Image (cartoon, rainbow, N blue to C red; front, side, top):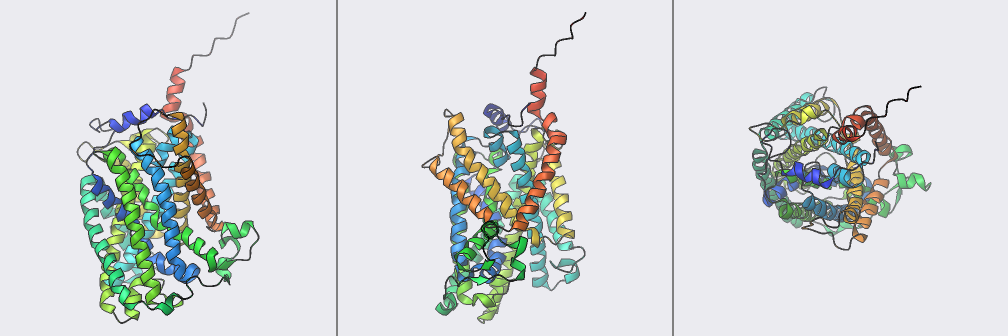
Length: 499
């Protein structure tokens, strides 16, 4: 049995076409293009716009953080084009995991599935702690139970994860309605931030737009420096164009959630039409909002004076518009709530796809007969995220979300030309233009951003991958559906000849 065995496309499509009535194989189709964009914007517009803008402007890019968001948005859009082709051709749960299984082999699929579970679990846990902090600030709640730092048990983070986990388990339609409502609130306030903030922008704050390169502080050297600097023996530094690229690699965290849309392929009414619309619409709207908000932020306040904890709210307070800070806090709570919900929904679908293939125990892939959702795996994932969010300060691990997503995007980009070569007959409602050139450019761009993350992040990522390898070879390699099929089809060994 080979670790590079691939899952037949006909098997993928058969699973995707199941309606879930047997409680095991398929999910119910209840979503349209607007719902998909709601889920996409719901997860993309969150931590990045309310937190990372200030952190990266102050520490790495200065006003050039606007360029960082643009670079990250372009790379994400390239990857989204590749996702759109695969998602419209093979609309199924699992997204990058399933695409890799059908094109590059089982071991690659396992690596990317394990990687995606890390990305969504840490992403939702980090955001849950941020949500708890904003709630404490808005209502003056005790920091011992709601703060990101200093709390023994973050009750706010645990509570929001459990509540939203229940919403996600009860039904995808209910999740879509909640998400769409939250998206309307935060998009409206993001537009308000841009329009109102333009009246307080000062040209002096935008100069120099890309600050001159400076030696890095003690916190940015050693294993905390970007891999590119470590590989080429460069002196650890911040700002300059290298700082803009480092910030782009970090703020890529903000865009990573769009792949959650591809995970909803089995629950979309017209996936061949609506999945490309949902993916590309999410990225275009989100990129415009990110660039607008980041430009207003660094124009309102000198980048060296930005408050990293609540950058946008504090910027309005600094220019005498404290009343706007309340609206920003409301938008932040709405924004982060939708991020957590979509993270939990996507994570459940990835776990469902992996369990359905037998790489982890298939009994946890059961679909609820009434709700039409993978309730067992979703409940397990929700409890795990609640524990992470409640007991571990995860801000130091946030970069793992970026490296996990970028790794997935590299493999998805490579999968496009591979699948075109292997299955030229496959119906492709959406095609990536200029293939294989554009998918190769997408893969290289994602890889380059990965190399701009810290050595420390790479070490943690490789440790997680090693743990995943142990689980795969210890359980999934011999017990998954393809392995059992091969065993059943192989002829019995001949009996030894007698004397």
